[in-house]
Length: 293
Image (spheres, rainbow, N blue to C red):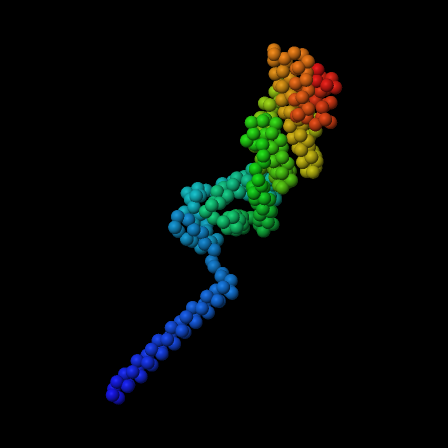
């Protein structure tokens, strides 16, 4: 009987101990969960790609880019553009370097690409030069994140010209005239060539001659920007005039229309395409009177 009583006491004691242990464990888990909810989680930034996770420390990131990223096996493109006096000069090489590193987007967060660029610049440049590079980088990113201009994919040459004019204006406003010219001079030349092709029906006497009368390089930067904007507006205007001339020729060659119908159709088309204050200027350019003739 005594043995049975002792066994029952021991069993009860073990059971109580087990209950206490379970209660303590649950309390620890609850406390840990509460702490996790209250305290911010500070984690080491990582880069994950193809199942490989690497820390985002500068040295490790550089190694990962060279060995595992989309840029593996390539050399750093572009140039810093620092002249013999140590000044950062606007040039296409810096945009090429920016675009080269931006290929990492999708594999690496933009913040880490920015820090990688800073680390590369710090290896080669003085502190003030690094600051200048990062300032241009910041403005370039603002430009890249803009919404596409409406009209680029339009079949209407006028809409394309206006869309490019708006884009060029934004480039100058964000980057400044010198950097915008350095970064996009080639693209601007191609766009100007397309505009010239659209302006082909116009005689050379009707084309703007501002570039022949003004030495652009002799102007202050602000004046250069205003001149560029005016040239863009003139180019867009010439495109619109070319379309008006084409419409006039199309109606002139329509045998089913009488002279009166041609005048009325052209007048209606011009009223739809040009503002009332533009009509006199258009009529003079097309050789018309106050109304379409």
